[in-house]
Length: 386
Picture 1 (spheres, rainbow, N blue to C red):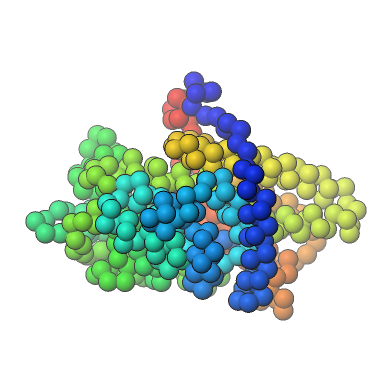
Picture 2: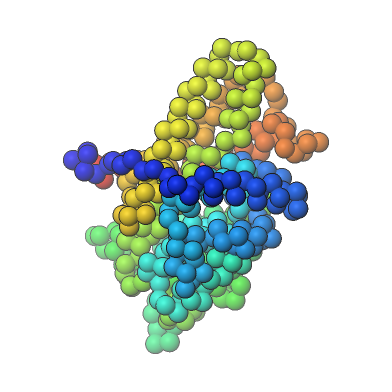
């Protein structure tokens, strides 16, 4: 049962990977000089529409998509290379990230041709940004308990309820909403559907949820009998759970699940030569081994996606293990490097400032994409032990 339910088949990056990696690195150097962005470990902490459009001009958004939707029809493994380079450089990717990573692929798989033609080319150009409408008050990662409902009328869908932790809903263009279209039954996963919400024009209320740094990334989005056209339904009515499970595999499996504290690990590595500290060397060795393992697993999942498979269980393993790794990097760095984290340092790229920001943001890493408890439940069910 174990072998058939959970495996990470070896995957090899294509021959084009080295050239593509070099191209992305050269672009990032030029972009950093031109736009003056500050590298950040947390990939969702910097929003730059200008940077996203410049990535679109390079043809690196929607890289795997059909050309008629603005894509380049390249492999998921090549996309992995671009993603890895953007994240390791701390580039300001938050604007396009959700749209390119999961919203676009979801529409390709389940959307109507009208939805695809209207939205996908704009995502590929870096001009259309998406939020995720899943989590709710008192529900968190337990999506089966959502209470937002969508009622079908003769001419529209009427939506009532609310979503929370909705990143950048105050500045993004669209949200993919998960709502109940049928009453709760014995099958808690039945009766859900997904919808396109126009964040700029639909009758909704967006309430800010400031984080501990005082920054406004999260929001509560409130629907009070909000009416949307019938053709905003994504896929089949009642098929929402199946669709959202496929969508979450994209969210949970990529290198963003273990690279959010990568720059802190680099600081640890750089400090080993200066301090000649055996404790730091051992810590760096253990963390580097974990990072290499997680990267190998994530590349394997990119290979599965390339073959059209749904790696939901494997993605949950990477997500859970990656979050644990990110926490461990911070914990070990604080123990072995006698440097006090501080906000608002003179040089915002310095270790002290990066560490201060990550300590404040770290709690959110564990619940974006699903809490550890949810991930372990998915893994246990997949292995037949729950």
